[in-house]
Image 1 (cartoon, rainbow, N blue to C red):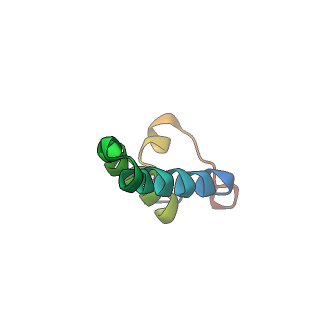
Image 2: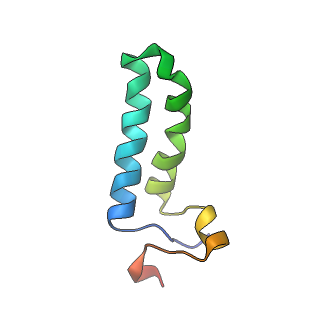
Image 3: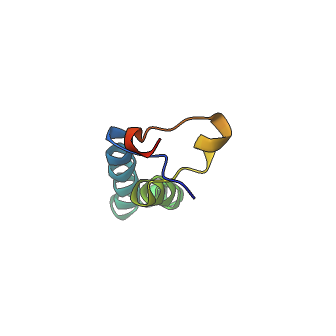
Length: 64
């Protein structure tokens, strides 16, 4: 599992993940989106997106 998420991509994933998870506490109808928010949060924290290798993409410049 090589790192392929870095820089602004990582920061945005973490922010979006936290925002989606937090939305479940303020808008009860958003509970499904809260669970979906776990995905960008984890990909940002672990610096790995499983779809990037399939697409041949890497946003981590120092990892290449």
